[in-house]
Image (cartoon, rainbow, N blue to C red; front, side):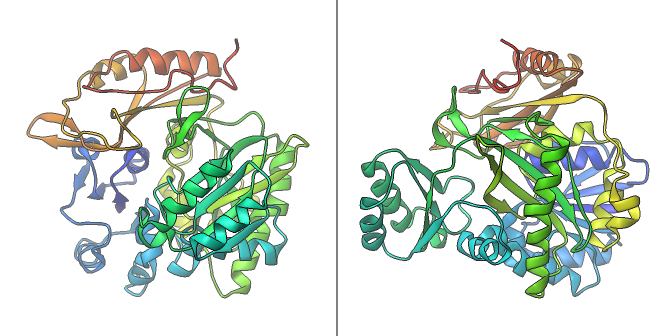
Amino acid sequence: MKIVVLGSGGREHAITRTLLRSPQVERVFCVPGNGGTATTDRCQNLALTVDDFPGIGQFCSDNQISLVVVGPELPLSQGITDYLQQQQIPVFGPTKAGAQIESSKAWAKALMATAGIPTAFASVFTDANTAKAYVQTGKLPIVVKADGLAAGKGVTVATTLAAAEAAIETAFSGKFGAAGSQILIEECLYGQEVSILALTDGQAIIPLLSAQDHKRIGEGDTGPNTGGMGAYAPAPIITPNLMQRIEKEILSPAVRAMADRGIVYRGVLYAGLMITPSGDPKVIEFNCRFGDPEIQAILPLLETPLEEILYATATGRLAELGPSGRSIAWKNEVCACVVLAANGYPGTYEKGKAIAGIERAEEKGAIVFQAGTRLQGQQLLTDGGRVLNIVATDSTFDRAFARAYAAVDCIGFEGMYYRQDIGHRVIKA
């Protein structure tokens, strides 16, 4: 198989390296890729952008591409799947209509209400004054969310009225572009957050291993939200019984509700959940793609060839993987992922800093997935806010995180920042 992977982050490097573990994958082409995919054997970066639909389509047609795997949400929200499907090119990722489950939080809330899916109560606003009047009468803390795509930075958990009003002003100021022209104000949920990434072809649904992300920039889960500073899988809080509830109460109703709207949803249905103190799962948000960095902590544990799973999903044959689609095999291990970020992230940060030590880190048994990097000649440079993902597997979380942080000590670039408490819920004191 020859496969095209769209995207340039750690998620896409992880997908690419996992695909290339299989002898059935002849070559992977990345659009546009990063410094890691540029130096991966049997992989080639293409000088295209993820929104160049004609260029991507022409390349796929000219090179007999078997499958396109869409990493980020933006091209899905713009209709890349619809465009390529018209050319009979298999695509892993939902159509534009399906991608609304992430691209519009208001649309997703309406879908959940129709399907009876447990979630936080929310109200939708299109102007700042009405929104401010609402929070003045409400209970704190409260959550303010930009309706559209804001790269994981459009959510504020406001513990004071001033913070809530500031978040409203920020959204309507244009900081998030069109994504902030409408906002949701939600009740604040309490408990443990967990990510469930499920594959679906519109009928069969197969949850992957659960994962827990660390969204805040600061240790102790403090400071502003980021795209994610680290993750681990599987999440011990998700028991088999709880996973059955999640499938029955959340995943299946969501897929059915979209089918009722004429949407055959094929790809990842990512449910960001809050497990409340009473043990009940509630949806914080849905996403239409693999979580980043959650998938970097999941794929190293996968034994079944990834291309088989993605192709079956894209072509509506997910149930053929086995009875109820349950034949996906996993290693009997756990996985830890630590994100190395540029100084200043998630705010303003510098690029172009030389990176050293990746080979030494991998000699220690870690996997280094590159995210915000680029290759300039023979020198690897920083090129984004989240730069590298340091990943390690082992029999216990204590051992996996010890290996990951030992590998972190091998890496160096100017201004490198990382949290030293990733995995604090699962590492023994």
